[in-house]
Every structure is written in C-alpha cells, then in structure tokens.
Amino acid sequence: MDIFIVNVLKNALQKYEQFAIQLSNGTLVLERFEELTKIQLNLNKSKQMNENWENHMRVLMKTSSNLFDERLIEQRMKQLKSVLRLSRVNEIVEVLVQIKTNNNITTPFEDLENIENSIQTETYKQKQLNEIDDKSMQIFKTLEDLSDDGFIKCLQNYNKNYEFVQWIRANTNGLYIN
Image 1 (cartoon, rainbow, N blue to C red):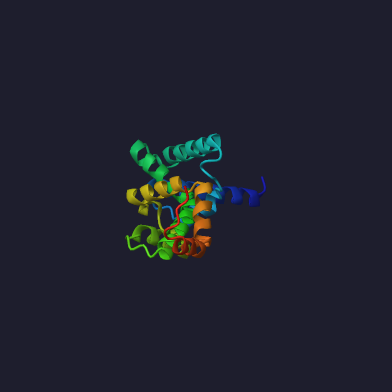
Image 2 (tube, one colour):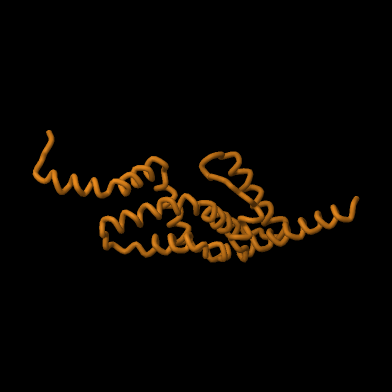
C-alpha cells in the first residue's frame, strides 16, 4: 500500500479514536462535532437514518472508549440531539423574541434571549458537550416541539404584519361581527 494512503488512514483512525474518547467523556467541542460528522440530519425526517446514527454513536462510545454506563451514554445522546436541534431552535427563538419586542412583553425571556445570543454569536460552538445541561436540553426540546413549520410561519406573518394588526385593533374598537 502506498505510504501516503497509509498515513491518511492512520490519521483518520487517530481522529476517529480521539472523537470517540471526547464524545464519551463529554469534552467534545461542538464545532469539532460538526466538522467531523458533517451531520445534516433533521431528526424528524428519517426515523431509520436517525436510529442508525444513534446506534453508531452508542457503539462508538462503548467500543472505542470502553464506556459502558448506559445512563451516561443516554446523557451523551441527549446532548448530541440538542446540538442537532439548534437550527430549528434558533428559528423559533428569533420569532418569539421578536414578538416579545413588538408587544412590549415584560415577562422575563432570559432563557430565550440567552439561547438567541449564544447561537447568533456562535459561542456555542466553542462549548464542550458536557456543558449542555439538563435545563438547556429541556428548553431545546420544548422549543423544537413548538417549531412546526406552520406555527413558525404563522408567528412570522404576525410579526411581519404587526403594524397592520395594531391598526385593526385600534380602528375596530366596538365593532362586533356576529
């Protein structure tokens, strides 16, 4: 075998093993996860593809780094899924923060605003997998549940037509339609 190919394969194997160890111990930097895997999954699209990917990650953690604690493996899987949800989460967060701003809502939105700031500045990419805590994962899951395309479009249209909605409210006071 050509020495160049041997070196390329050896380098790839070393990176793969390093990925497995960092994945298992939670020190995997999210940007590295995106680089190495190049995963462009929408977790709702293909259940079989999703299951194959999940099984591969589980086997990788067990074989390459001798991680057999099922609770920890499940925690890592939840963290990885949270990373994959970020683009959908960002969509709904932007819309909800815009609604808050347009309507002068004073209810605290710190969690949403923190997520929005983190995703937009891409500081999240420098975080390690183990920095994604249970609270963040629950928020991401809830926001993803809200991120139905129809619901997002409805909220975006509301934001886009906010001034018109305000005009209708102001000029139809006392007008009732039966």
